[in-house]
Image: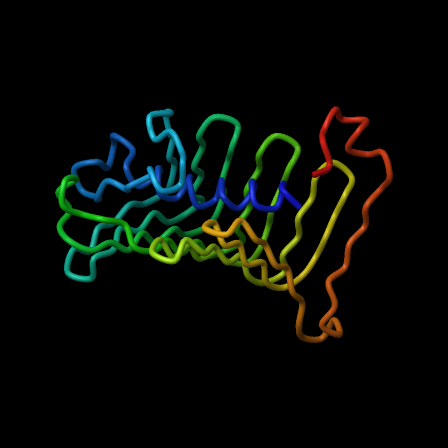
Length: 185
């Protein structure tokens, strides 16, 4: 189950770090990554068709084929909304929420997490990947409709509801992780 948390932590980290990339630093608040235990000094590349700041709404929006990359982690989505409080001055602003929508895909090494949307609430440190959630690592796959990851407690919960009978579905192939030199825990 650790790979679930790693993939979604990557989603949160990319969103937070992405908002502080040098190209947009003057317009968006600096995140506090210390609570996530992440090295915010690693370079981040952000590509999007458009970037808008709405200081009256306290939002910065990346839209159109948004691609965020940091190290071996890559996030793709149609739209990423960064909500903040305070000013856009990097010493005063603070990111409060990240909303990714329009097919969210997070790749990290041989791990992939996909869903229709994702929300990261910074204060509660809870990430939700929603709608048609598919998690893969190697040949192992698990599906549901809502993945909730609590970064404070380190717990993950995948649930399923709707027309599929409300059941989580998984396929785990014995030995598939050992063949890749991975620890299954």
